[in-house]
Amino acid sequence: IEGQPILTGWEEEIYNVAKKIMEEPSPKQLYLIRGKIRKMIDHNVSPYFIFRHLVTELKRDRDKDFQNSVDELASNLNYCAGRKFQKDQYKEYRSRDTTLDISIEHFTVEAHDQGEAIQYFIKIEEFTVRFMSFYRSFIAKNSSKGAVL
Image 1 (spheres, rainbow, N blue to C red):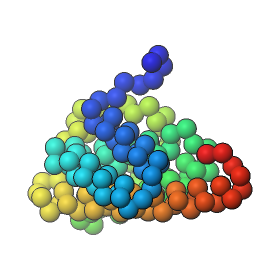
Image 2 (tube, rainbow, N blue to C red):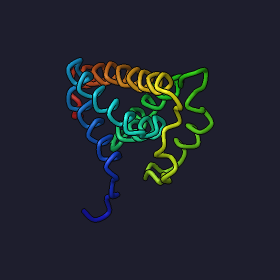
Image 3 (cartoon, rainbow, N blue to C red):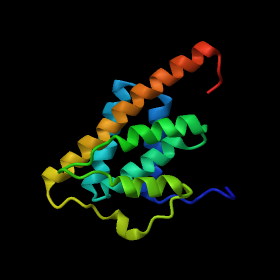
Image 4 (cartoon, helix red, strand yellow):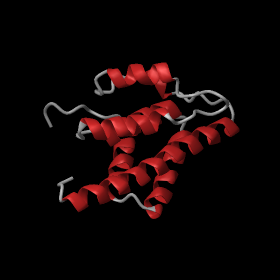
């Protein structure tokens, strides 16, 4: 479709994960999503790439308050091994247009061993759980107001 960005295979997978989270923020869906995220990490997709694109997709076509809430959830996420998804990098990312102008070197995993990759996976899963909880509350609050999502 004209005007829409063309997604790579992994970007499309992350788009589908975000779509499933929004459609059904449930424990069953979390289980299915865990498998998809694990598969991406097993295929050496950078955890930062996964996280960054997941956040972008969850914010897509939402109002500013919703986007700010998602940014807050994301910025509170600690990266593993004493590092963080660098807050400066994340702030820079937030300030840019979210058209996903990422270069190919970001597709490589930053983890050098299996233990580190597992820690990355757990942190992305933690964000997903927090987002699902936030989104369920958001839906409940807005449905009681009669708002259209």
